[in-house]
Length: 234
Image: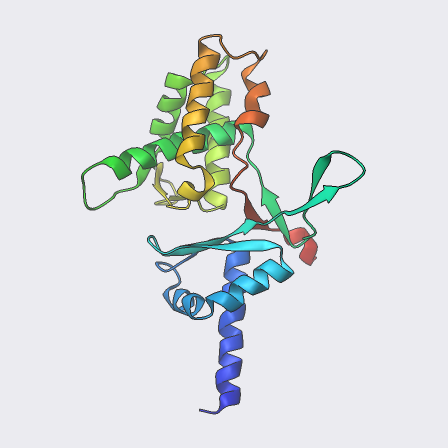
């Protein structure tokens, strides 16, 4: 095999890795051959995303998956006493979560942590829609319209499926597999802070007029994913 053919094959492999990472999560389980090449060309791939897409490549070697995280450029503004954050990319978007989605994310992260702390050697990262709903009812303020609440919870679940945090086991199933990426989106500290805010709110200690007003504080933003923006390809 000529060097030219080898070089072309490497370019194709790297291109496929770029495409998969821009679309979402690249895992060994679903893309074993791409994972091998990701490890082989790790430095080149990191450089590509840092320089061209203003994103950091995060690799979880324990669970064998990788994803992109937004890398904001911090710039000191000499005219006013504040820091500006510049995100020049148009191909990828930062992914923030609405309050209800953040709350559902918290419930799933809590279940994930519980499974991790069990003594079982084989982890079964499964959660059901009923578990999510029941936990919501146990910790969140009482909903005025439970039918509307169930619809909103399902919308939030669907949002988390789209970005790969959970995966529906079957098309019509209410069983979801939790992806380890959730550890990178909501860490232990954020999870505990989220729960403490809910507890304080329920006790009347939180100085806000409504639970929705807490969303800016509680929405999980410190670990920001980047997602594919189809509009820029039209």
